Image (cartoon, rainbow over all chains, first blue to last red; front, side):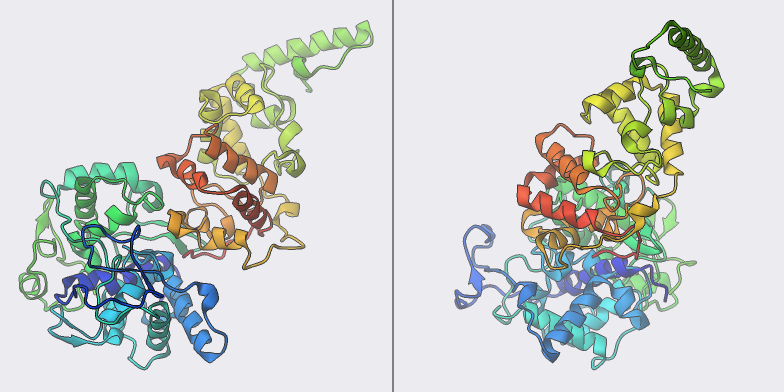
Length: 319
Length: 235
């Protein structure tokens, strides 16, 4: 594929890792105390969910030398510039780090350290127990609108190794504070509204992502990722769901000004973003209503619904 | 057709010079009254506009490359809309600089537009396009701030908005590569102090607030040493 989508891929991949995990039901309440050396509590802990623990991933300077460290670094490189380092499996211009900020390290931005220990996990999305590797495959299929790398491919092995390294010291099977996007109790005061979202977008998002939502590029590569259209994530990606998008936006957008939008603004602009056309869900059965019923029967998905006279997910959207 | 700015005229040694000065003044007035010359950017860059705007080249160099030692920025090759906004903002006071505020106020809107367009089309001076002879360490504090940011304080990598290597992105995110460390440092301090507050979404005012003096120096040095080539893709 072309080399433009690195940034977008990062966004998609980020979303896929944790955004999708939001659809699962296996979040684990805190269990026994974890080693104090790797977990912290206090200021960083979420006061609402006091049972959860904060976790600080190791510094990149601590990546070891030698073959293991080389693979960790390879995973990091794929993560922050996916089109350049996993081109065979990428179908758009995004990079994992577009949605998983700070190279997958940032709390409330679906960090890798928050996802790694939550697998294997049963996922409603595909109805079986997924390993972490299969979860990564989903990122490529949906968020990167690409092809699924084999579980033993260099790309999956490197991403899994990078994630494992970042999660070193974190408890297994425990939902850590800052994992995923902060969706707990995050509801829109009023139902999300396209017209309000359009205004929020113009005031806060168009500066970087462009009035047309296509991001901005330098030398053919993304600096700011496209939010919809042929180079963005497809209709099967977790970020197309309003709750995931709103939570990500609220916590992290505009870049460096996370937490400044109101809850209502975040939901409205998430709706505006996801009421635009994007690549077809690769699970499309040939029938939009059937595909919606099978995979999108959720009020957080606008797929297969009509917005402003356009039936979202209808042809000519292509796979 | 030289028309020296009266405010920059040197003391005249004799009446002959004075006569010529009057003649030049008439010339300048005539030119100023002419619609064609009112927006002649090249004339303004070399001679000022005759209404109080000093010649741009006096501080920004004949090629628009700036004067690193004085901290006067490069203008050549910058986005036209960005340049025009800065002139408007100097005039409006959201960006402070005694010299530039006086200059911008003395320029008409048409002149600001013409100058912005002129400099946006100027080639980047070859001297600035060359990589630094002694680039700062790739893992130094400046490099980390520039390319990775400091997310614990909601500071993204500079290149996430200013583009790979700081080459600049569109009309809102100017290039940092090809600017002097002195200029970049001065701007970061201006954001901190609020003497510059013309940033969209107050992005730079917020970012700069958490930077230390060492951070500012390190990141400015890193960008000042970057070559002006764009490789694409940011984290």
